[in-house]
Length: 104
Image 1 (tube, one colour):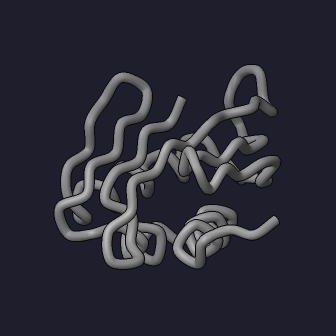
Image 2 (tube, helix red, strand yellow; image 1 turned 90 degrees about the horizontal axis):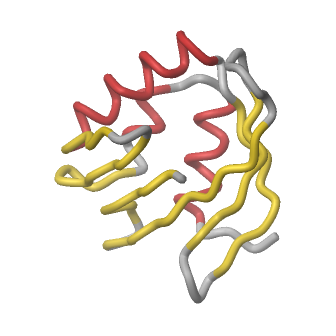
């Protein structure tokens, strides 16, 4: 699967529970939408993913990437009810980093 470098880095950092590296995949003013909540800016994103990592221990396995739609379908496994589940990540990029991520 041919993924953008920043998406590969995001997956690797998620699977290693490295919230600092995960946050570096985003622009300073990036926005993440997940579970009905909005996380604004790199620092808030790092705090959000650190908490999620501790709570869910989620790992991502890429299933399908659309370069046209900028979407990544993944199998997410962790310590949450219903694991594993399929989730879709909707990306917007800027200068090689993620400026927006919506997880559904």
